[in-house]
Length: 497
Image 1: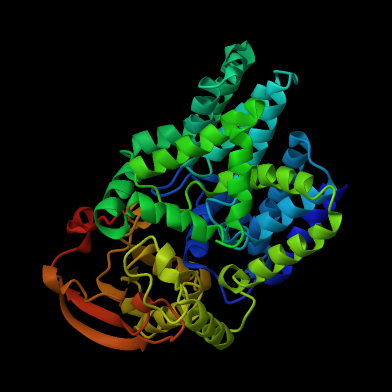
Image 2: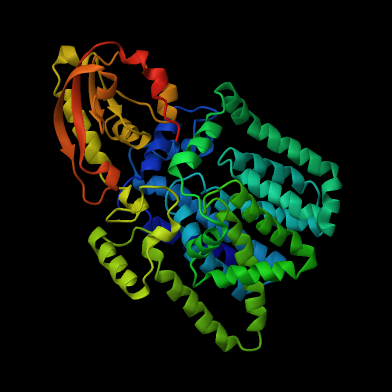
């Protein structure tokens, strides 16, 4: 019952706090992808786009969209509490684990907006819970459920493969390796492969675009930290003031023979991330397991001094509140800017430590908050430019967006306006039959370098002080007089990144 109450409280807070500022760039993209269901997309598997699209079945609703990650966060808290019980903890350990889970910035962020990491809040600790139960003699047919969850996880985000490999290695190098000899373990692996197979076949049939995208990101867009910086980033994304709890959990797991495979799995996972240049948040969904473990020794240390539990709970709440405006959009924009400036003046800490890509740090707001601004206005301006064309010209016109965020904003907020883009899934969707004799281009230059259009007219300039900097002060052009069809150079426009 305590686990259910803590999970319900988590869901309620997220439901109240999540739906503010506006739709995030990736959320718009997921919705549009989900409206066109496929077994895969250039840059993500199918489950999250489908969930995002279903949430908008009754019309545009930021509340219903953000309810999806809120439910996964609540499920993650529930399973984390079950892990606490499995590890031998009581009510206080469950409370501490739930508080630290909720206030851990990266986990709170996963529970705030729709993203491919949200399902891992529930699936990763649930897989660990079932595995622990199997090592304790539970019905080996739990392997079938583990396989199904692993398959669903792969269909949600590919990086779960690193977690699964790390778990297997962790089991192999401990005495718990015996559980892998069960025929049910093999059956579970077969189920995982079967569930993940449709997406693998889609990637194969399309030339594995995800691998191309990852290579492009590592060579140009992504920031690749050194191992020491990566370790620092892990502390920052879990809140340095709260990270001690999961570090205690890691040490406790290392000192507990029957559970040691979980600590080895974490260490292997971090090594994998360093070897393959994973972003700092890729392994984040393993932290609920360590958080659950860390609550056990804390509960035991305070068993004889229960009065000490009050300041521990107070410390967790205060430490979390200090950073909660960074991961829940609860402050008005100007209030957040003032809050962050004052905190930075006192602590001399900025958000640049945890940036993962070039060009996302120079904004008035943090990158995630900035990317929730300006999209409806951009779509309205593109629609106005398109509708300003004479009816005969409009028949041969299309909006060309510079990236999937811009394209998805137009498709979502102005669905009657045709839009194409060279970016990721939009390039694969192609020109969709539009001849583009007239082009309404967002954030471009009418392909002047290709000498494609004879003339261009600036229709508007988009300005939004809160928007991410590369979507602020950008032009909308009307391009006319193509010297040859845009389709001729379309194959060369592909931008997977």
